[in-house]
Length: 282
Image (cartoon, rainbow, N blue to C red; front, side, top):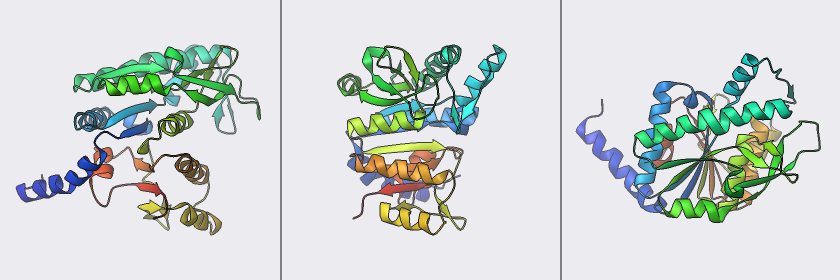
């Protein structure tokens, strides 16, 4: 338990960050253990409510891959992946719609609102929130990349104190529903809004080099570590995608460990943070 002196120090350390971020917009990609563990779900709902109450605009984009796979299995609909991405046919898109825009979205909204967060559940079809082009480079079925975001609609909600919780589905050019990777949907929304921060809650600590967490990275530093083999495997596209988002106008991108209670607050309101932030060179 924190003693009185430590509590005072924590609050004092947080104050300049609260002043800096008041009125700014954060986009948070919510997934992994933080969506499955009851204790972590509760702390996430508390964290985003606190951020909203102190004047930060919050948009949440959530995944739900495991729940989609589980429901598809229960309905005897086969699941297959192409290069790590879910193949989405007509039957599977119905499952995705039921899980993401239905069950999971409303559970997240209800939990946040229980904490007083004024959340509202949406998906890409609502008021043309997200439009997309079907991916044609490889056959993924009804899967798309976001081509436009209705920022007027999002800003209307934010300006009226609401917290959009977005399921990553979009409308294709032929008006068909398309499944969108949640990471990419969050990046597209953050880019369209020129957000202050894009935060990925995941099941990893951040960027590790020789088992040491790297707290901050510029693009040049990241490419050097990739060339040396210090950043490798699945972390390479994640890091490069983060810098693509930075180059498009987002101020900072964070990868943090959603398995840690209140990791969102610890990353944003403490000097050291708990994850890795991708930043513009100073």
